[in-house]
Length: 544
Image 1 (cartoon, rainbow, N blue to C red):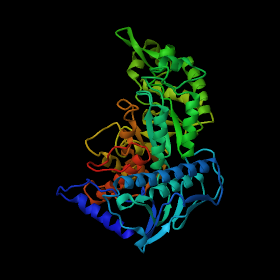
Image 2: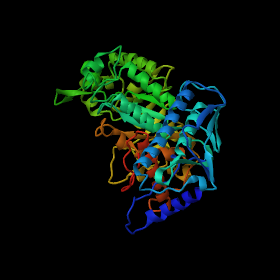
Image 3: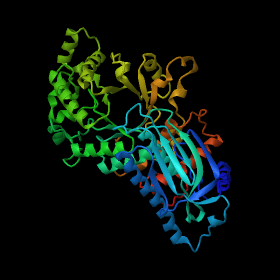
Image 4: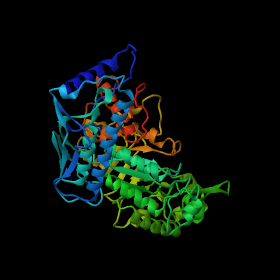
């Protein structure tokens, strides 16, 4: 069976690279290829058949509620895959001829079980330094082993992706395979924005399903912004009562507990962002006094960023953040700090006087003043993450602050941050709200943040580039198109952050064809599992 797959994949490269238009998909999907590509993988000629009545997961080592839930989840995934094949065969059995596997000397019968050997007790929550390494051997009795529950989860996902439908969809098959796998970058995130458009809890959970399939491990939840305040606070209920689009468009304590728990079961952290002092206009619907009055020609023309001179501002922020920390167990808290409308600060007579009294000559010093008062409000429970403007404007940040880079593609913005000894997250190349015609995932796949650093800066600790994040800002996405807009475009980011370093990506080399064919399979696989990913490459088909 593997011989036929190798021949098929070679045909895929030739066929898709041809300049002659021929019938069929632009990039024929591979069969049983894992996304993101494993670090080390060896496939054999022999193969097995999935029989749901025979196959089982068995636990040989430690166990916990996360593992039990994963076994239930992946049992359902495999049964669904088998059912899709059976259903399609039932529809087309008179029209499609399929070679019997029993006559093939490489066929070794039904896959019996996957033995799961977790070597250490489960951790309670995923975290920045979590171990996601695993080893997997597929044979009649297959074995998955890891030192951590997070590695077990990644290995179970890889195991599920090795299954493929035989020609004619008569059987679901898997090749004998050996894998040793681990992520290249520790931080592999996706940002969603629930202020510009409200996203239902169901679609946030669906996003987490897709992230699990792509081995992404951080959901960066940009929960509030200028446009709306959907976070429902118990201490400050007026924030959402007056700041949300609608009373139904809020995230309750129960909702947040559900989302965090769902993410935990998939080895995904949920990172809250409450962006301050800018992007806070919705806070001021209920509490206008915490915002700055903006002046023009001596008249108040509206409200701008938070007022850095008002002690009430810091009292509200501190109390709110303590509540948020109780709901989000992650050890990091994103404070934002980007795109502050300093023209408003410069226009306000009270702030002008404050600057004069404190020997400040420019509004960026107000920004630094604000951030140095806000960061300590996190206390010992959370470490700060900020957008790069906070660093760029010279704010003296604690050494454990992570800086998120987004403004300039390439090394330009990363080098000063690395030189200062800070860890960073890279996002500049991965803004999913920037659209291009056709399958634009290629441009995301071309970016590798560590490769961007010039050789004469190689004395910098490139391990301080923790990873990166695909950002799906919400101006033009809502519940109706979030999933298809993100996937499989974010899959390109996921593979660049997980898989082994490759030579710089060239749009015109044959490797592009290989990646395109694998992504074609992966997008179809996501659809089979209920994630409505858009076509990645052009004409094609998917049995789902």
